[in-house]
Amino acid sequence: MNAGRLKQTILSFATVSLAAWLTACSGSGGNTTTATTPTVLTASDFSGQYTYFVTGTNPTDGDFAVAGTLVADGKGNITSGVADYNLGSGIDANVPLTGTYLVAAGVATISLTDGHGTTESYAAPIIKSGSTTIAELDGTGSGTLYAAPTTAFTPAGTYTFSLKGDGQGTLTATGSFVAGASGAISSGTALYTDGSVPQNYPTLSGFVIAPGSNGRGQAVIGGNTFSYYAISASQIALVGLDDRALLDGTAQKQ
Image 1 (tube, one colour):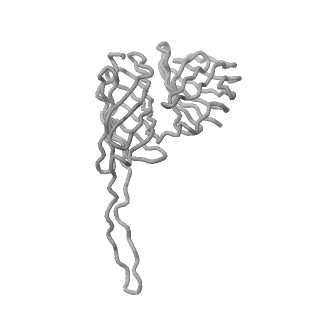
Image 2 (spheres, helix red, strand yellow):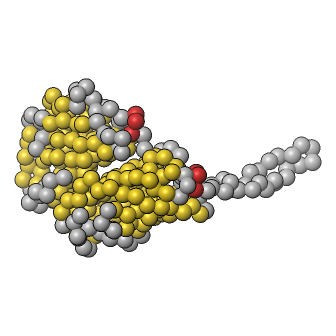
């Protein structure tokens, strides 16, 4: 575990509005408004596997990207989870997570702990599908929480990708590649710009390994190694695992 990793990270997820009142129209007597009891959400409403992807800048660790999954049991426990941390101070890869959560006013407050005692706390609106915006309370990062669709994702396909990070300078990259049924990249191209220096890669090789049951997959695109998490059936979030060029981004199937 990298000692410099951000501790006690607190994220607030954009609150999902709940319909609390329904307006009904009466017959000949004119319009009347009928109040209904708001639905009360409990721990059982937050269950299953979720994926999150957050990027930002922290005074301690510099630019960072974090992606991971967690499994809520519907009883107030995070039974399992895993995350990858790409930090200015280094890489923390394949970090196992467990924890607990409480539900109040439609929001699940989640406390995650790794095997080294580092704790992260999140407040997440309860979602059953789709995604919601993450805004970090201290202003150092933002991102998205997804109701994880990892079982629908398979590696084969034609992708476009976009990356950012730090190399010798500010690094950006765009490109495309084709992955076959085995996940092997058969063709692709990329343009990297490190500072003001462009680097063209007319031929890409590598692979995209199918994610495990925890939702974490691995990929090599060109000469760069990544962990990835499916954030839809056709899109993955990438976290670079190479200290020499701290990268993060997404790849989208066409």
